[in-house]
Amino acid sequence: MTRIPFPAGTANGMRAAALCLLAAAGAAAAFPDHAALAGGPLRVRPLPGQDGVVFSMYGTPGDLETLKELVAVMREQGLGNGFDPGPSPVPAAKPLFDFLATVGWPVVCYPAGDMQVVGGRGTTGPENEAALAAMDAAGVFTAVQLGEWGYYFHNLSCNEPWWRDNFGANYEAYKHRMRPPGLAGYERRPESRRECYETLRAYFMNRSRDLLGRVMSVTGHSHYEAYAAEWGARCVGLELGENIAFTQSKIAFARGAARQWDLPWSIQVSPWFSGACTTSGPLRREAGGARGLDAGHSLSLYERLWLHAWFAGAALVTPENSIAIFFEKPEAPWTLTEHGRRAAEVFRFMRDHDRGVPYTPVAVVLDHLAGYNGYMEKPWGILEPTPGDVELRDLFDHQLFPDADHIHFPPDPVNPEGRYLRPTPCGEIFDVLLTSVPPEVLPAYPVILLAGDITFDDGFLSELEKALRRGSRVLMAPRHRDALGEGFERVARQGAVEVLEPWTNPETGRPAAVANDRLARLRDELLPVAVAGDPVQYAVNRLPDGWVVELVNNAGVAKKPDQPAVTDPAAVACVTLTPRAPWASATEWRSGKTYPAASPITLEIGPGATAFVALTTPGK
Image 1 (tube, rainbow, N blue to C red):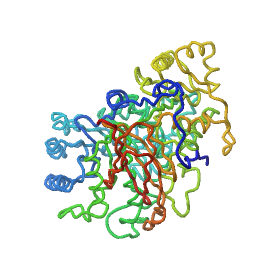
Image 2 (image 1 turned 135 degrees about the vertical axis):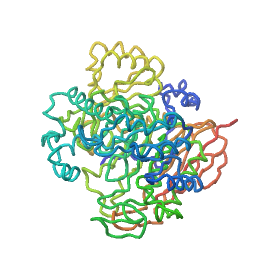
Image 3 (image 1 turned 30 degrees about the vertical axis):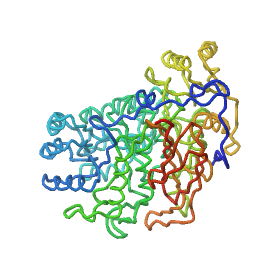
Image 4 (image 1 turned 90 degrees about the vertical axis):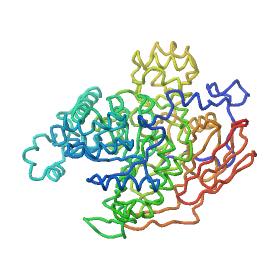
């Protein structure tokens, strides 16, 4: 798969491009300050009523006294500050919610029955709402999860074995609600993207009404995060881990959706891995698969995902199945496992450090009706891809986040976990938005990259022109210029519009949305620090007193679902940071190591390890 190479040495110097982040030609970079980012659309929005990240426990005891014990242990051990899921919103659980209202921790509920099935057994009503009354009165956030709804719609709504397993003896009473086979969840073959959009919207709104209007959307095998945000979700959630591919592009979609619609977003890290699942206890065969602390994913991947979710701006980080993983037994004396101890360390680290604001200066803008779906490989799960759709797929899977697809490409037989997180040649500097973007969002991005087939309606044109007038640079393909027709000249007069040169990716043999070297130039122009050396995953956040760089070495830890992880101690990443913005000192947060105000900074990152280097601005 296509890779944009990491610089072998010191990265290229600043280019005098006409970007709003750059001053006049030859001048030093004028990077945005923290207040400019944190006060606008690029801010990190926590869950309502919270002032920081929520690290949740997955599961709660069913009786009040044991729940009180668990809350006390979580407080004592620093093991979290929320529940996802908490109790089901049923009348019998009201005493539990009454207690949790006094604790003040957010709770995500899972509805009883079949949350995804229209007309199924998961409908909630006034009696369920009443169970949450104390939480509402105390102003504590609650939501009801609509989990994996995209995957259900396309893959399970027409899957008879799933319906038989799910409904059991009641199958005959519900089978009429199945969708016809071969139509990816639709009642009939849709004729347009608009019809697909309206069908998915009607489905989502039906589920939202049945779930008290408190939906927290969780998508895994789809990229529908922006639609959930538009359609009224309280929180835009992702399930990662499990057997789910496209981790980093899904984060770019979710964070962009949250910023587009001013919502919090979340990440749930699943321990399921090809039939195996992490639980407490020794590695063993159970229920048709492997179980135990060494089953499922590696502790290294969990830690990397938890930390990256936090750094990327998630309001809620949920280690799935944690009540069965973090304790030797989910009961007194609540003895922590190795995973539980590591989770407490990670949460303490999150609380002890201001992660700042994720710095994503490039907005990748897709058409409102694009219906991008990497898992299905077809727009809206059913339509035949156009050349523009193929360019989108190549952009995310071959250029921005290469080698992240273990669904349509075979996993590494030595390390099947190796494609869950990937090195990022240009850093994680991208948010994905749709052309339905509300006012004032686009101007927050220095660069706007139009990708795929775009319909230039009046609303999007107005926001695009506003962004140009305020200094954003717009990159578009010749197809976009042609789609604008006579309107192109009007748009171009508003500011810096660059029509990209056609480029065929030599590795795919297909035309690309943007050339690799143009992406590399954006990286060099926009980032306040150059990252060179061994390939790593990296991201940059803005702090009140400077910048912090996340560096993730995803190499060196091999994991198969039913075997313990194997660590290669020689898989150390040597990375050099060359700041482009003024800095007075640097500190690696996890080790506490400091670096004097000299350039460059060189550090070694162990196998499967994450480092955070904070650069303090002079005078701060």
